[in-house]
Image (cartoon, rainbow, N blue to C red; front, side):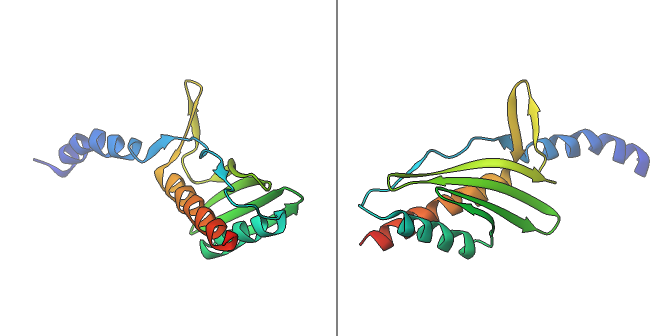
Length: 132
């Protein structure tokens, strides 16, 4: 079998595997602040998690943190709304993360979802640590 035929036969499989690298983009549920904490301590828990995971804080406003993650040629931007009762992470935009909307549903590279899951877990852990 010639190389051209082999390449043509493998092309659909390669395209199919690339499609599996996307997943529906869903913002995580709010993180509950279960202990009585000041907004300063909630912000401290968020900042600790962001720094630990390599995110850069791009803007700080009362109750809102904007942050960016730059990995190789990928960029993700998020907004974190926080109060003394909850923390909410929201997707803002991205570069080179295969973001697209299909039939009204946004999709993004699966790695983004893992990064946000790790960040969520770290924020939860930091809130518990600072709350005790």
